[in-house]
Amino acid sequence: MNPPSLIAFDFDGVICDGLIEYFETAWQAYCQLFQPDETTPPNGLDQRFYPLRPVIETGWEMPVLVAALVKGAEDQQIIDDWPEMALPYLEAENLTKEQSVQTLDGVRDQKIQSDLQSWLNLHRFYPGVIDRLKTLLDSDLPIYIVSTKEGRFIQALLAQSGVDFPSDRIFGKEVKRPKYETLRLLKEKHSVENIWFIEDRLPALRAVAEQGDLDKVQLFLADWGYNLEGDRATATQDDRIHLLSLQQVVQPFDQWI
Ligand SMILES: [Mg+2]
Image (cartoon, rainbow, N blue to C red):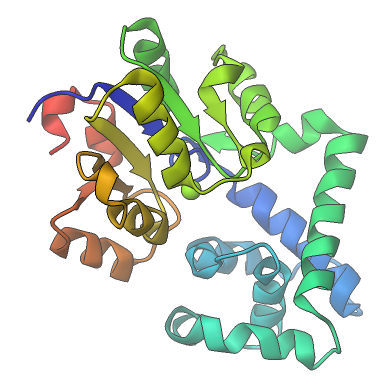
């Protein structure tokens, strides 16, 4: 296995652990949407929310997951049936997906505008990953971040950990295109085939695997990120996708596959 000619990392769930921020934002959006009597989260609700985070595909589901937990849904039921379960919680309150996501974005925007530092402080980095990024930035290997988070926030989060990540190496939400399109663009820009892409969401990796012209891209599912046991089991069966651990990601590339 040749080492990569270019490497691209997803951000949330690969480099950055944003679970505390997710829960806080989701809880506040839930309170605005569902108007509960109690606006302080019940003890331990955050700890139930964190491992269930992978069931969420899009933002509108975040406050709904809080609602489901508050209203007594079982964790296993959520893992098994979330796509069918989610919408009825909104419908029962005459709410729409649009209202849910707008409320969520509003809560987040407000936090960022009123106190950016407090918002940044709600994020953590996975052990060893920051040092690995620094080493890679100092090497000749082109390194990119391909994310659905706003690039400027990614840069601010990395900066507070002492990583000066060039803004032209970050492709965030603002580029408004699927991750496989960004990989295709990088492939052409650098004239490379052997791209390694590290991502914690199985559907995003699958979408790359479906692109015939990206067949040389090595796909890694970050097993420490926002995915479920079932996703990791699927990845081990899939001959395009490699399961990667936090122990491996900090090691030389010959230990990755
Ligand atoms: Mg991710």
